[in-house]
Length: 299
Length: 294
Image (cartoon, rainbow over all chains, first blue to last red; front, side, top):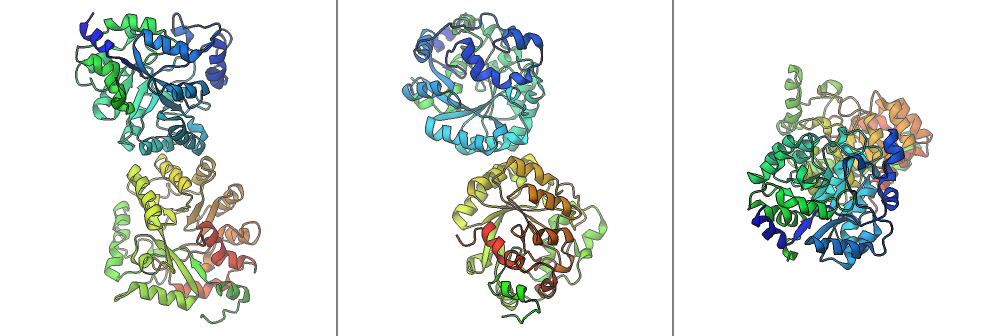
């Protein structure tokens, strides 16, 4: 365990992936039913309420929630998460949370590239009206799936460049039992080449292409990696090594609460991650703040 | 005013002023020849290297000027001689600056330039009065197909700016690959960008029947007759204009690239358009599609 970790942690954490607590039934309706038609295997169809639940122990569970925003903020306070990135694009509760607590949340806007110009306009509206400061896409969870380097993504990437906001994109084998080809890390090369000003943040591990992810981060200055959906003890070795060497500015913390991990588990494992001392404040806070443009507002 | 042509419907339509949606400003011969160097770079055959105009094997009497002290005056002279009230050119040209009442400009984009092209297009429209985007993916290096991802940010910007995209379809004249301007590629673009207005150039051959099918299917797809002498207008296009497509077919010449206005206007009255088509073809459709009256 490292004093540097605790010192950095006490300065406050920015979590680049958090969600509004909801019952399993609500989450299923709001998020997972949208790609249920793509899931063909019987076990996942009939027994999973969360399509990647076979990968996670102790998925946070709620019977009923009186005030989900208060619950979330209390949880954040307990673990000293000062800021968290919430999807305000599709969730009205998240929108309200951001409006009421602009000092605790940063808005992201999930976009479906299948919706063409409507999606572009939705992103622009979320930026101007809801205060969204990032876009996010889950390529494997779309119907139909859309590869990271597909033409349908290009108008969205262009809009992110115009708005000067980052885009968070899932990369690597998806947990839900749907095809992975659309999230191949290799696709990112072409996007970074064609949109050199685009700030692109990988989500969800990039496994088993984490070494390629490192190569591409070395090559492309605006490519980043966030640790969403991974318990700290499973952070890939290549990513930790990169953060400890040339990539200290490229790796940022993301949790997965309440979708699949509790903050309690994340922050009990976190001190054991083998980051070097100087990496901790960058990882826990500074890199995310810089990419999201909230540095000035940090405590 | 030009003399009567023998086709009263044509003459009546022309009396309101023709809008020619294709103008390539003429230059003196040596300058003109060098304009096509980028096409020679893409060609592999020796014959193209030796051509003054890289599609000249298809044309008789390509316009040439050995001495051209005032190109704008020369174009205006020809326009007046043939009843052309306005020509659509390129927004950065001298002619658009000097005579905005007679010339309006497109802005040419190279899709290989990514966001720089997007930003330049936006600036050209908002600051310099460009009325459309224009690209020729076949002449880009590397070539960029109509339905390529590199085109998508430009199409999105055209929708946002509410301007048409002008592009080229059909087998190209210069001896370079045709695969980036197949008519079939329009289908996907019109599907994904239903608000996008497209005006095609250069004939669409040999897929003119598909072109008609796609215009029936997609309400914002249009066809202009550039690079074709009127006696070679495809039969399918003339038939479509005479039936359901009167609002979709726009006149475009090919001056000064490959055809003289004298030849075009000598042949034009002989095209078997029905009477009601002529005003739409010669000026109304262009006014509407390019919002020239706004």
